Length: 483
Image (cartoon, rainbow, N blue to C red; front, side, top):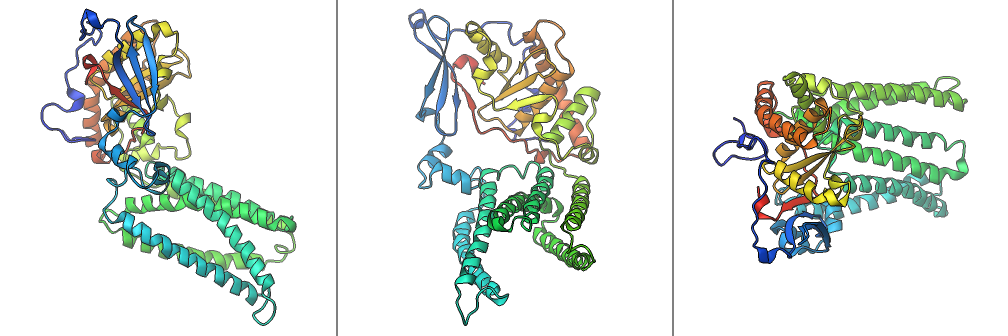
């Protein structure tokens, strides 16, 4: 059996570990004597990235107590210690460095980026100076006369570019983890955002007095679009490079792009020379709108033909839904064809929310919290996650999932399979606990077949990229609940 998300040290894979037919058959053994009855017994703790922790404890009256702790030194692992002791503040490192740094990149990454920064700074200084010269050449100021007009125009023009650069900075720092998961969607949205930026440019002739703010907004929107476009393009290029020839793929794509640019510029010049285009603002705008819609349609068609072998969240849903409903797993071609690249995860059915705090899972009356915690910990003793259902019995039921320590992409995939089984076999009457237990039994019996069919359908099981939320991380503290 091919392993996924980890390497087996021997014995059965994690989805074949023996599970008692009933996880609730016997109560947990007590590890404390009568003398400890009044002491709070730790059950679990939720760790957060900022070092804070939420601890769940059972007090002497068998009531659940929740306690916030600002910094839980005992639960911070070695990697977190290294980050805490780093001279770079966490907020800055999260913004400018890849997730998992330094383990997720090569040893020379940081040194290269530190040298790239002054390289780019000097390049943009040169760009600013050259812009002033270009403006003088077209009549804005001159070298022989006053240069104040050229300098002022250059400053305004560069300021417009600076606003756009801020947009790219924001996208790269805040949303850098999105592109590996779903490059097709973000490449399409890049063109939507870029189109919105062009609308601001088109309105500048109508309001020449507001040229700088309108042009700046247009440049900002287009820069945000480029911020989504460039990383997505790199992921797509990497998909094409089956022989490790990423550099050549990028170079040849540049050839295609420059060729298209020359043709497009030529056609654009011919359109501008057409009588009525330049003299009529409405005609120009309608022509742009028609060409832009055609551009978006071509972009969508080009992305639809991409056939990724990697398993992201959308494709995982398609695979799991097919196996739960029909006991079959589609190949990567059929799966990619069934993927809606424009849909957001929050609008897909069933509704699944990952990385949910335990308090949201408990809900209801506080008097039932202790029973709920015990039930969930027993049910999911052999899983690296905990799943429960919110708004049970409603068409809009949400499946809430929180992950334990050492959870992997396989843990996410297993939770997806269980959530789809629950959605397919909706509860017809009372008996939530039995329903959840039945779903775990179905998971135990069906997941191995699901993995086998994925392999037979040609999926690369080492390319399952289902990200485990960074917070909260559930840590079980009571020995009776250890996994």
